Amino acid sequence: MAGIAHVVSLRHLLVLSLALNVSLILRDINQNEKHQSGAPMAVHKGTKASQLRFLSFPSESAAAHETNPSVDEHGGQRVINLDHGDPTMYEQYWKAMGDKTTIVIPGWQSMSYFSAGKNLCWFLEPELATQIVRLHKVAGNAVTEGRHIVVGTGSSQLFLAALYALSPQDSSNPISVVSTAPYYSSYPLMTDCVKSGLHKWAGDAKQFDKDEPYIELVTSPNNPDGFIRHSVVNRTGGILIHDLAYYWPQYTPISAPSDYDLTMFTVSKSTGHAGTRIGWALVKDVEVAKRMVKFIELNTIGVSKDSQLRAAKVLEVVSDSSEQAGGSEYPESFFHFSHALMTERWRLLREAVKDSGLFSLPKFSPAHCSFFDNNLGTQPAFSWLRCDGDDVDDCESFFRGHKILVRGGKHFGVSPKYVRVSMLDREETYNLFIERLSQISS
Ligand SMILES: Cc1ncc(COP(=O)(O)O)c(C=O)c1O
Image (tube, rainbow, N blue to C red; front, side, top):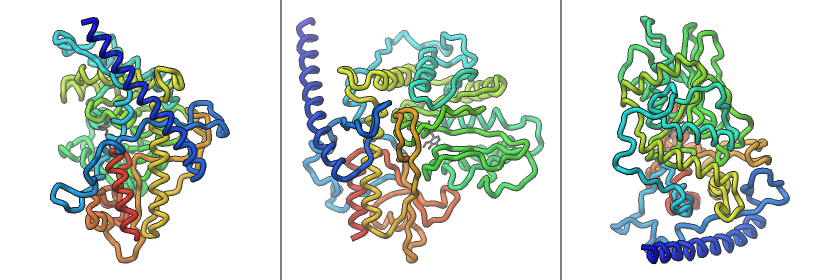
């Protein structure tokens, strides 16, 4: 047994050393290329612009494919599906992390419905609560003091729980739910899914002119267009839900810790673990938190403990990697890695769009990021493309004609001239998208 352990650890060391060497070589190549192209750089906390250095993990696609990835099994043009925001891009980092996030759950563990802690949210695993608070401190993106943490099966469940908790229970009419267009395409569908008597979708917040109570959903940075958002209705009787799924350093400069009444986060977009289905809400009002807990109790009698423990380990490693970045355990922090990758993807996209002359993209002003302690741009999880040509009314169909699946503007409450494109897919798919976009333009 000891012999096997020895061989395994030697093999691990060899693989790690190879990965590190390739990584260091790539870093130098990257640095030269990026300096020459003038691309924005990824940064460590506190690093001044003059000292920036790249450190990227080896590319996945280089060795992965001997066959032509642009061709399907019948020899036709492959369909590129960037409709969903499936965050598979992050697999690359977690593969390189090896066993750091591996957890073992014996058969007798996590059997009870109940969690051990004394939390108001009786199914919240104490270790997950600890790691959520820690990660928000590390990232600097949310105040957790004076908040109740409510865990959910993804932030999707928390969204429904929040609507339930915030809707007046004794009103004869359902409360209006609004969000500024373009809004996340699931909001109208989820709000009206069960045709509840408690709440109803009322569309674009900018058009809302009723003199009655309302719930406004504020998504910041926004899905689909990536802009920082604030509430717009600002009338008495208004209740706000802040969906901050993308308020993490790889997507947007962290300007200040968020400090709202009800804020939702998710591992789906922060670490890429969408399949783990864990989200959390930070809730100021104890009665609202209790009602959200009640909803989840009625809905799923709690949230998978196995998933919570896995999420806790992943968050722990993200925090460790940030605090120990540059050391032997963590040559590169998770946020540094993902920021660098997003920077590069946006550089490639902007280049392809500029060359084409057929599309346009939103422009973002740089802002100070407290996490990286630097002035940085915005690089959203989705690109919000406009088909500029007068002959293209339906941008989604236009892309479908080129075998690229994206989501059209009408799903987000705006013109079909726009489409949303996921920026979070695997490297091979993303590179294929850029290649095909460049071919459209030529
Ligand atoms: C703004 C926003 N909120 C919530 C979600 C859902 O996240 P979860 O996977 O945690 O349910 C998404 C997913 O795309 C999203 O874009």
